[in-house]
Length: 333
Image (cartoon, rainbow, N blue to C red):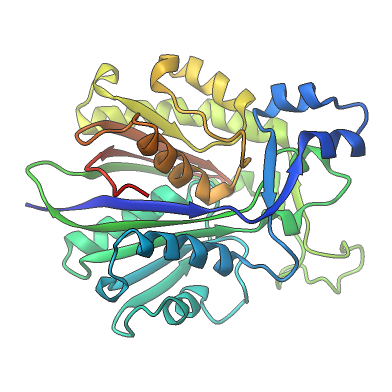
């Protein structure tokens, strides 16, 4: 049967960096060790002024093409971002032209954060397995650093910028290479991770608006939502896939921060050796965390062809998604 499969991944981190030493100088009551212990992050990469999400996604895609992927074979571009270049046009259209992808390719943005990569894989699977596309380029690009208040250490210690590129293509297999999927959303939690001003509901001209669109996060509420929701989603996915927990080779969760992931791993009863942590040198890069982690796991030999990985995203919205990925292997970078 024809199934959608991940066949290539790469990513790009901008050159700017914010280290724990930098943050400790700004917030003297938070030591370098305290920041590292709480977040699991040592360095966050940040985009330069004028460097946008499309720039990061395009750089990641060019790395993918340099590995031998033929850009002329791409017939759909999906771009996940919450920091688009413009309100309109769709940034995916700009990326299609910039990357030299044929004009016969479809192109669309979708605004979803830390669960966005899972949703994007689901969209790509649907396009491929209904015959609408054969090779989907799933891009992510986030520049959350441009939304952070300089005096808000709760977000500045966590978020970094990045772009990723994943090729999802039609493959012949007796089993699904991607799927099943479990999704969820709860808009009642929207205010706990929000950029309130800057669009049309609350424009920047409104009295009391900040000087720029600014991210506000209630960390305690996000933590509670995650612990209440994600273990049940993982159980539901394994049940739908008819998999025992022991059959899973690697669990790759959204790389939110180490404190949250440690609690989630224990609550889900996942052995440490099967649980991936990769955020120390890049931070929480929102929709790019899972593809970055997958790419590094493959390079480190933790994902070999035939391995079964459970991928789980969760966050802003609230929204969450989980899927099973049967690894087919990716080209060496």
